[in-house]
Image (tube, rainbow, N blue to C red; front, side, top):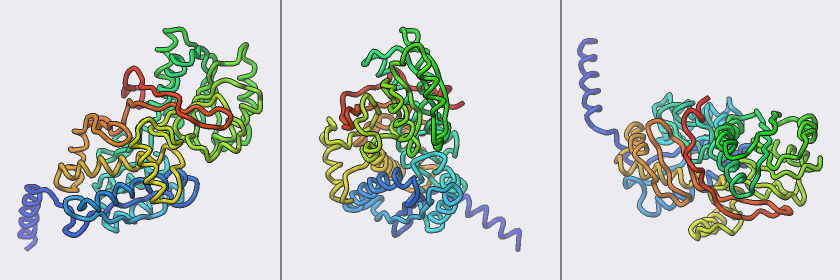
Length: 397
């Protein structure tokens, strides 16, 4: 009897292997294992709201593979241990796609649960290379652009467009995202040094440090104030660091990553000026792409609020590219969807083209808008695309 069961199992496996596993007969399920509470909510909820807008559009147009997309969710509570539980929860509810938090450190537990289950996971907007093949596995992707691209973009832009020559590197060691910004800066600096730039110092701090007085003292002890400080940090600690730098009388241009985009924190640093961030789209009503402004209006209509930062946008793009891959694969089966995603080269999305390969499930080059904050008011002053993509050896350390 056992022998017959083994033969039957082998036969069934052969049959299943011969045909793609089609999506559920009645529905396709997207599971959000994201931060609905805690500090990650500020990043996750806007991107999730944008994802819901794209899901609503797809359902209104007839669905995906002729089926409606159903959404299930679980709160990670901005906690790594809770993240793993949230991932397992949406998987138990039948998720075909597991969407996880914006940050690698906080999204990885849920993404790893999806990988173990053989499901596709998408980080809403994580920007560490580990939020993909290198840290989770072959079924994991991110909807955003690598943090290293941000660091490389801001340093090259500052050198070429603002004529900055002397740079200071200040790294918040808290997350992989922060390290990624400085990794991109580190990769770009030798290229700029060959053209006359100079790294005049570097230091580290931690996001929850109440004071960075020692680091500020070392900056002020330099023979000359640096032209630019590459500040590799994110919320919530970014506000304290920026406030202390300016309170110390340091007026150098401050360059940062996209993690500080948004006006919600600016009241804590009154009249902040000479501060620059890269964004995929502008929430300030001045995006040069009218389709982005139209999306901003739709977002406000659907949610009752304006987009809070550029991290709204990757959520929309994520559902867009995943749905295209499912349509082309004619199934939600993970390997088939991954194969279609990895065929995408400069795939058009509302917020710029997306390319995925068998080696990289991220964007290692992108056009960024540059936002300048002057007297507490943000505005787009231009755009920049790095002169060459950030290579793998600069991403994986």
